[in-house]
Each structure stands twice: as C-alpha cells, then as structure tokens.
Image 1 (cartoon, rainbow, N blue to C red):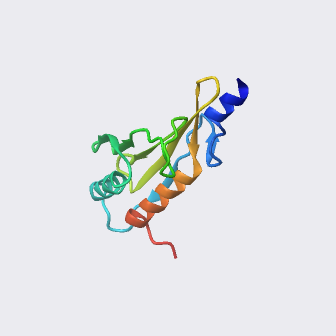
Image 2: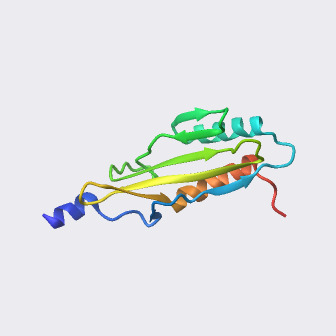
Image 3: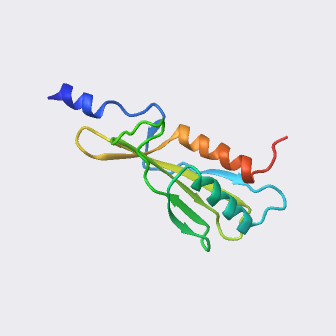
Length: 133
C-alpha cells in the first residue's frame, strides 16, 4: 500500500518550500508611476497568466485562485496562488506565492514556490519596477 501511495502522491516539487511563514518580495515603483496606475498594471499583468479571484483596489489587494499546474501538467497534489498588495500611501508592491503540497495523509502542507515567486517578481519588475543600474 505504501508503494501505491508513493506513486499516487509522489514527492513535492523541488521548488516547494514548506513553511508557515510568508515570504514577501517587494518591488518599488518606477519614478512617475502612481499607485492607481501601478495597481492597474499589476492586475493586468497577473490576469494574463492567472485566474484572479479577489481584487480590492481600495486596499491594493489582488489574489489569484488556486492553480494545480506550474509546468502545464495538472497535479492535483500541488497547488499555488499569487498574492499582491500595495500598502496605503505606498510606492511599492509586495508579492508572495502560496503553495500547498498534499501529503500521503491527505493534509495540505503550507509553503511557497520559489520558481513561481521569482517568475511573478520578474514579470512585475519589468512592468512597474525601477530600473536597476
């Protein structure tokens, strides 16, 4: 039975970091970009790749729904989502990825996905971020 469970559940992706702590990354807005314009650019960029589940422009919050694929293959044992927030009166966005791995006991283990976080960071940095010199 253990062998069957291993086949069904396998191992978590190498990019999964098991933790209950959030791993936020911050991107400062490029000069001249205000909060409203940044919010629209962030929402538009995320909506191109993710199903947006929650948007609240007043609080600056955007969250995607759970996705069960990172590589184009469906994996019912691994799910990820993206969260972005712009603090009030801020010139930066904070982003994080949530990831859950379904263990052999049927429990979702909390964490984040390093590859997805870097991908979202890079995508948003290119749209709203300051130029690095």
